[in-house]
Image (cartoon, rainbow, N blue to C red):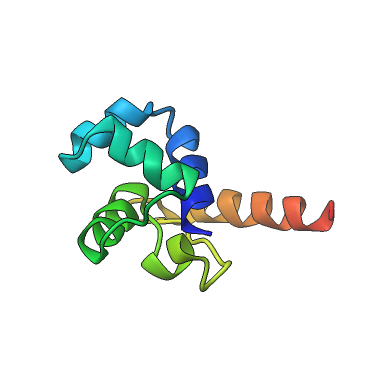
Length: 93
């Protein structure tokens, strides 16, 4: 559900509802209503949230459960480390 993803991603970034509201140009109560499932963000805000959280709109909407990691700017050694970490985390489950 979109409301759970918004809260989860906001918390992961260490943002308050007020912080997120300011970035989007909405009120804190609007963000709170999204997170409680009382209302749903418009398409405009879904796009803004996806860009801000660096996820796809499909992920945010719960259509795709696959999250992506932007590796732009990493060199080949960095990418090897990232891939090794992902492999390690997957092997634990």
